[in-house]
Length: 223
Image (tube, rainbow, N blue to C red; front, side, top):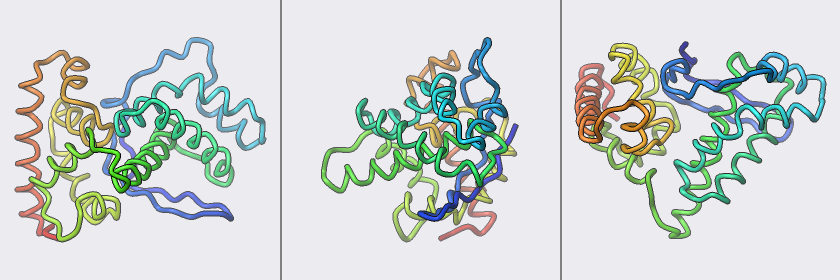
């Protein structure tokens, strides 16, 4: 299942547009065993009804998923927990009027955006780099930008081209790319998840970045 590249979140206090490349939920995200838990549609209904148990149900199903996204970027348990809690608040403030088509992706994008913002604040305060610095440095090898990679990346200037490129990849290559550059998984985590060697993951990422650069060059996406 693919996810559209952008969506808008609006209420009377804030408005923002979040750009991401296509995320293949069925391929790259963890499949959660629900058991007798509520499905997404019923949880979203609780938000629309302004029933506070909506947040409890969200945390039960997606708490670990959201924490993983935040902690991959921030590498700090307390900061990651704060971003997850802020995600619940954002979801509560924006449903309604928004009714997410894919609830898991909706939550994941909010958490990722909050975590990246906090990461940039931390870096500005010289609290040190981490996996996110490594990821951006890798992307700089294949994306030519006048300004910072993260700045142009967030503006979505190359999102459409990257979406098209991802569609052209084999499933395994696409999963590795998305796990690395959207979920911010380390090479070791990707290797363990997909049961392959770290050297193979590094090689796949290198070849995919090289192919992406060629693709962007051919598409005329030189910023």
